[in-house]
Length: 185
Image (cartoon, rainbow, N blue to C red):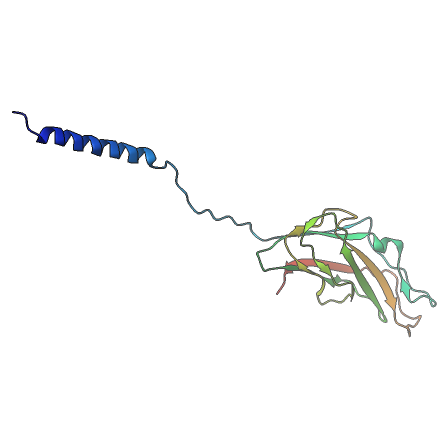
């Protein structure tokens, strides 16, 4: 006995099978996911100079002594900061004593331009003290390059007060400076 149901059943089954096969072929074999990438904050600092910096005793007619070695010092740094953050560099006298009636002035030049990124803004002149003082601010993610003639040139000057007396002992006064790179407040 032949029933109309059998061909109808085979037709429906064939259509269903073809439809499943087309759906399987049309599905993608890829998947996606979110990936978070972060780089930790980094701050590296280096001072480059040909030799130690020393100052001679001022004589009566000169109020500022600038030895030749005082303008061949360079500060190099690398910095990675989070968005909206910045670093700064401070300096302070950490050893030795500046003779009475004298002071040491530090001048910081603009970046030499051999690096890349958001290098900092120098504060051009500060009188050194034992308290940390900003000398470069607004440092973003950047690098200045390494060695002399890279980064910011530092120049020092020994300033004698106008009413300095000859009785002060200016010899053998070694001054130690500490440079620090840290997050800005």
